[in-house]
Length: 133
Image 1: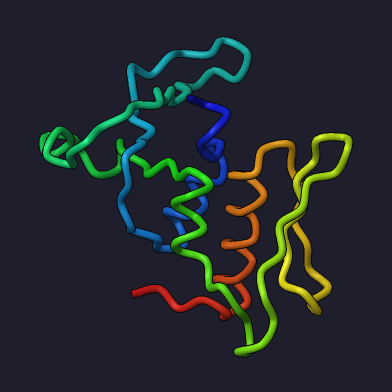
Image 2 (image 1 turned 90 degrees about the vertical axis):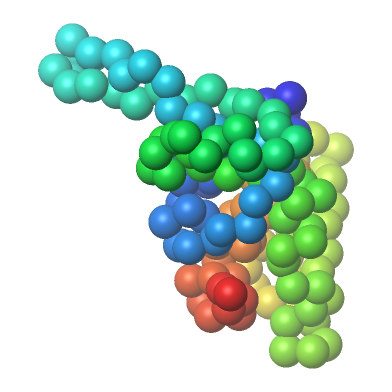
């Protein structure tokens, strides 16, 4: 399941940027562990599947982070930039996915397609190509 959804790092960043669309996977905070190396409590998250958001009504909203799949992100990402520049997805022989908008310099790469798409969505939001609802 983990190979299909974005890593917690990107899920957290999308939450910070204000992406609120909810799909079927969530990272849910579990028991905090004390780390002797850093002398602080580390947040641990578990990836969960749900067919209903009702399951998380009793959770603190800070403890639940949407974990998007590639399909989820393809529905969120704009199909074109500037009404003419289309989205391009490719996979190299090395297994690395590259996603970009044709004609733009920015391209995102990752071994997981979902992470590469999340990076592109983050770039779109930060560069005001995508407006949040």
